[in-house]
Image 1: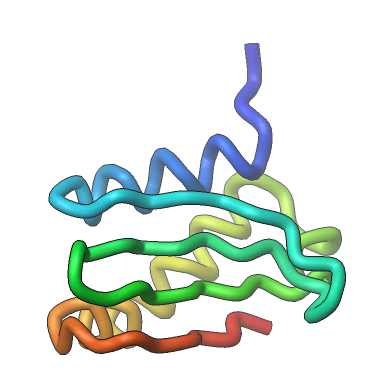
Image 2: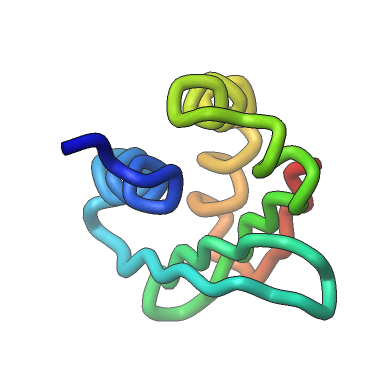
Length: 87
């Protein structure tokens, strides 16, 4: 059975950031799907806009996140609260 995009992104983030808790929520106020990496002392919000989400499939959303990997990793390693808008 094929994974949903949400499951695909959660698997990607949990694999790359397995030392941290990763949560998901839909945010209708900011019109985004939010993936939250909780390091224990900080929270990093990865906000993927509805348009990017809707225009992507499982493969292309992972390609997009991989292109942002350096930016995401830097913020996680800085261990400070952050919001990364991934539009």
